[in-house]
Image 1 (tube, rainbow, N blue to C red):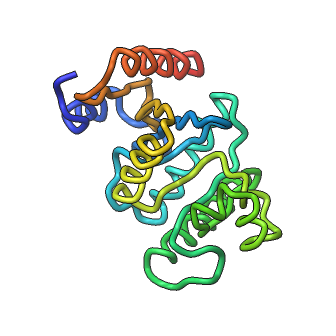
Image 2 (image 1 turned 45 degrees about the vertical axis):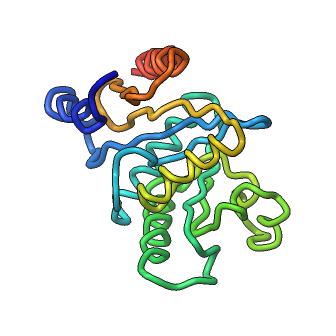
Length: 201
């Protein structure tokens, strides 16, 4: 594990290529918390996804969640919940949410929504009482890489959660990357999730 993520992924994009209809490769982390496993995306690949890319990340992350036996309840995270806030960043999340609803009407999805309203039942009920996702989100989609990468690391360090990933999504074959600071357990876990991905092909 001596190469950067960029150097690892570039050959995969050149030779393995993306799945048909997929325009963006993204990633998820499985955050193994004390009482649940949450799926965080995208915390490793896309710096500033537009609404279409964010929608693709959300749909791919929901599919990854389902493949690993976690019912996807997708929260499109922002600094605003519902219609309470304004701004270009909020509108990007709002537009992405609408794209997902149009393409995958069967998915339970809420956005824009704040992290606390997404995962805390009390806050979720208070801020968005009619939501199927608020307070019980299992798939959390971050609006940009800065937010996602810092949040997963903060949750990992402050709670002691096991972070498994990043697991790449959107390629024709499973390709995953190891951090240059990885442990033996990280190597083991990455092998396991890659094998599980391969079984789904």
